[in-house]
Amino acid sequence: MNFKPSQDVWSIAQICDHIRNAENSIVERAKKMLESPAEPDKEIDIDERIKEVLEVISAKNRDKVKFPAARGTEPAEPAEIAWETPKEFIAEFKKLRGQSIDYVNTTQDELLIHYNPLIPRLGEMNSYLWLVFMSAHNSRHVAQIREVMSHESFPK
Image 1 (tube, helix red, strand yellow):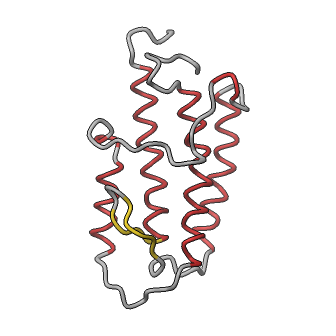
Image 2: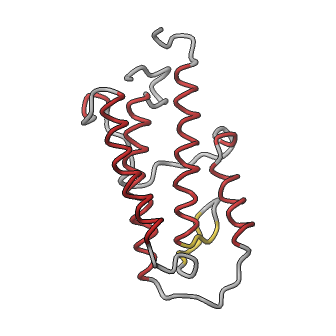
């Protein structure tokens, strides 16, 4: 879990820590945006915007489109990570993801009409698009984990 192919590459433990940190951060961002004034008359092609967000954050674009970790989602150093095994991480992440899914399945919030200012590379995002981003973000980092595991020096 702590193997790093180089000093500038996150370990699997750090990638998992970032995914966990981002799960709450992204959902909270989507909820916080609901405090902004509603813009029900704004016309966007939501299907096209979903495609754009998925394309930008997709795993296949990891080398082309770099995103710094958002404030609060940076991973801890491996020695400071709270869980010790993959099973512990998975249990914790399933709990967090369950809360996110519960929110998505039960919310009556108007996710499509609250926007934040332009985000570099992503454009204007509404609350709904941030929730789309969340799932694509995880896929992006699963690809990153696979890259670390495929490194020639990765412990077998």
